[in-house]
Length: 174
Image (tube, rainbow, N blue to C red; front, top):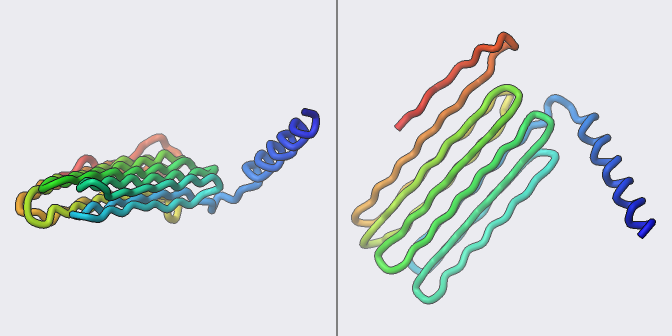
């Protein structure tokens, strides 16, 4: 019991020291993707930052396909999250992606999705967000290859300027 407490204390002290000595150049980012085709599925993710979590899984069995990719990157400048999920069976395929970044210099939120039916019902949805040169960025894209496909993408990024409390926004785009 005493050894466990000592190890936890040492780990906590190292993490705290690492956080307080991080440079301002530290940046967080996260990206994820999902690709669902007739008979196959794939998913993945990537993250950067002092704290990172990346998880993905995909399966194709009994005529159905599923994929899920997740990434989280966090550091002293904020947190970035990306999540993609998709499924398909028979003539239908659907996928969605969401990205969120909250940082000192701004915020970003984007999402996109796709539904595809008939023919090659393959669907792909992907996106990423992060901080580059002190500026928040991100985006989402989705596409489908079926006979009837509907896809959308929306994005909103706000950059906080020069410490004067004002911000710039690119607004919602379709």
